[in-house]
Image: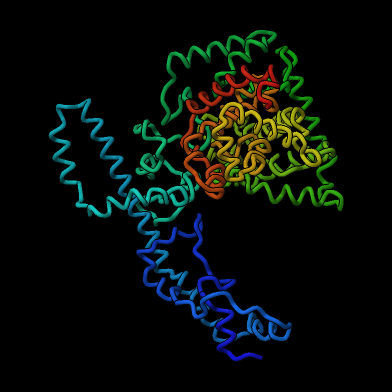
Length: 550
């Protein structure tokens, strides 16, 4: 066996390349390595190599064994490695870097607010002198060198978004979707934290669940003439003895007023007949049929061959829209469990698949709106009469079933429907924006890695619930909206983030962006633009499938 000196000469020529040593991680978990901050830690890793040139080749197995016999020994080398790891992960250095990011982000917010005030001065010249005097009082001196560093620090915000709110501690979030949700009074800096909202500096923060502009409830604006006119048109179409479904679809494509959305969705989904006289009897029959299924099947949820299905449903329900208090109520979760279990039992070809639980929520919210006037996010459903809640449950079940009937191949074994749509999305994007397509190819981003969720959940994980409800207004009005038109919406949605995608220069950055797209501030305007672009793509490609094939 060789001496200890020979062992170290072979095994540790350069401590920075020791197998298993801690290397600096670039990404969402750790801030980037800063040579200025870590200069004192780099000294230990700059030891000169003790053995220049190539190592002597082992001539016998015994010699090779003696040279490498210390590879897994417990000794001084391991203690040194542990000390190196402790230095590299020094918590003070990590926190110093994180605080620096937060500080620079706050300064960016202040600068953006100052720019907004300067733009307002152009339109209010008579108040310019007063505002300048007030700004001079409020401004605090800033270090010139720190301003220069902001240019380098802004790239860090792609992985670290620092949100600071009065009365709360500072915390790091990956994207706006993880930021706390509250009223405008609780979040005065929210507008500054969204770079894409700079063009709309005075836009009010939209609540989490859809609040249509034509609501005339407390805290919401009164209907405009155009909105009132559209509502009258809907009422006229719905008031006839036989509803003209084609005309109803034309009106619904641009969005449905909240007051008539429940009845419109039931008609467009095929749950209710166009003949007004038959609707009440149809509702009673279908509701009785649903609760007959519950009496027949629901007690079997604990049977051996149904246990796995019910257990998965029971796990997924609390994860459904966890930020909305409505869906965390026990009575609502019980409703969802019954709906999903009965659907799974009645559709054995697919059974329950994760993601189907999300598809219940828009129907449930819309049909709750049928019986209340106030906001739904914090509404206590136990205040509803039992018969009303039973009606909401049955209506949600049947409308979700109608939706899934058109896309069931998305959820059968191996989910072939989703795989076909993701492939079609890739071909479509390669034709409409080859630069984006090649950029993702360059960094080995597969469409299935991010678009699978878009197809499986119909973009519900990418958009706020208010936007999903508006999106589904158009899906209900489009022929094969949930199956066919959704492909073009996904293509338009991807190209919508073209600038942000091309700015990312590695696989990790692209995946973080595509899985955390900043849409929490979206409302009807953004969804309408997205749908218009999707319709343009459909008009160009739907009737010419070879057009987007190479």
